[in-house]
Image (tube, rainbow, N blue to C red; front, side):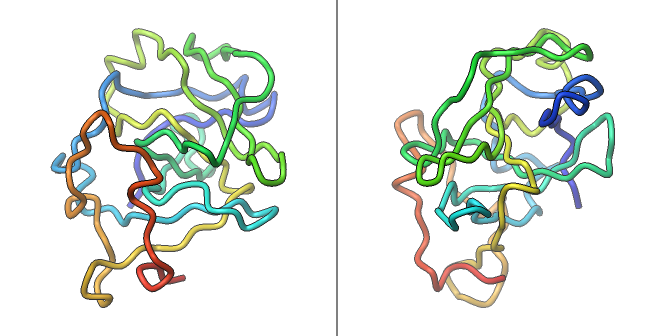
Length: 174
């Protein structure tokens, strides 16, 4: 199962992409997303942990393009590079993000979604990771037997960040 969100990576993909986002963080009880697996996202270049709340998604404009998104800012794992940009397909303001450990660009952040994207159906994630720049592990639940699903995650309050939700290695599987 894939989530329908946008993905802008290269200049050509930026020109053809279309982003769909929401102003608010996705509710983990949302029926459209509650059965999706939660993934741990690592930098493919240096194996650094980037986030523990990843979700598999695809580009709306090209469903062959896969990516991962998260609802929590990946604090202390990525930083912004270059300036904001928009695409021809949409007026969202985007900014590339790079791994802090190795410096490679691993995705982008939606700094300011445009109105059409805010009104579209989406998962509410503003942090995107290029599938060619990351590796992922499906997380397992507390029993260590079943995959952890978005519907099983606790709701976030505004003060939570990625650091407080890091799983142990035993909570992840390939």
